[in-house]
Amino acid sequence: MPEYDDNNIFAKILRGEIPCDKVYEDDHVLAFKDISPQAPVHILVIPKGKYVSIVDFGAKASPEELKAFFSAVETIVSEQNIVSEGFRSIANTGLNGGQEVPHFHLHLLGGKKIGPMVSK
Ligand code: AMP
Image 1 (cartoon, rainbow, N blue to C red):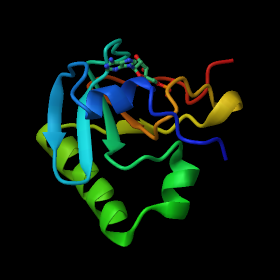
Image 2: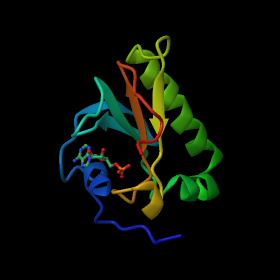
Image 3: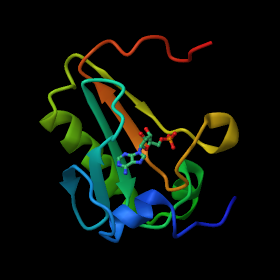
């Protein structure tokens, strides 16, 4: 597991050093619009804790952080009205997963048919 890099862009957003288009925040979770949206709704949900990936989060997060994260997802998709028509959630991980930002984030994509699960 790579070490957490405090200079990653989401760490800077969490420290308030660069802005984000916030859609949700609580003690453990921040969610904001993706700067390069791939769908009408494209939101990134991140824990405030320093977790590199979904693996790191699953291994080290407290029960409170885990609960807060998935409760936040439920709140966000409900507020965005994408539950009934469906949406896709993606957690790119590591090199083969194409993860660009090494702070765990869950993409929520909706508002249109998202298309094939994996492009060839
Ligand atoms: P991933 O490839 O899963 O690591 O995705 C990183 C995502 O972060 C991409 O979809 C980018 O468009 C998005 N992103 C990068 N910088 C920012 C930013 N400053 N604010 C919002 N989204 C960003």
